[in-house]
Length: 200
Image: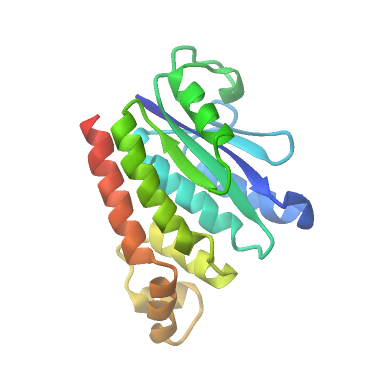
C-alpha cells in the first residue's frame, strides 16, 4: 500500500511564488525525488508519494510550512491504496492510491484536509478527528505554524533547544506557542493514525 497526497495552495496569487515555492519544495524533498515521488504542476498544485504511515505527518508539515505566510493555506487530500502503474513522473502514475487521493481532494469543501483509505469505517473516524484538529490548525498564526513545524521535525527537542533554534530567549513562549498550536493533540492524532494504518 502507498499514500498519495494531492494538494493546492489557497490564495497563492497573494504571495510571490519565489517566496513560498522553495519552502514547499524543501518539505516535498524530504520524501523523495522530483518527478518520481513528487511534482508541482499548474503553478500551485502538487502531488507527493509517501509511505502510508508518513502521510498525515507530511500533510501537517506542508500545512505548517505554507501557513507561515499570513494569506496562504493549502488544501490536501490524502489517498491510500495501490500504485498499479508507476511512471517516471508521479503525475503520470496510476492506481487506487491516486484515485482515492483525487476523489478525496475533489470532495473537500470547507475542510482543507481529509483522507480516504480502503476502509470506510476508518475514513469516518479519521476524518472526524482531522475535522476537530482543523479547528486549531486553521487558526495557526505564522509564528505558531513555524513552531509546530519545528517541533514535528524535532520531536525529541525540549523547549530550551526549540528556543535556541528559533533564536528566542524565553522558553515560556515556546510552551505557550505549542499549546496554542495544539501540538500535544496533533501528536496523539499522528500516533493514532500510524497505529490504525499499520493495522490495514
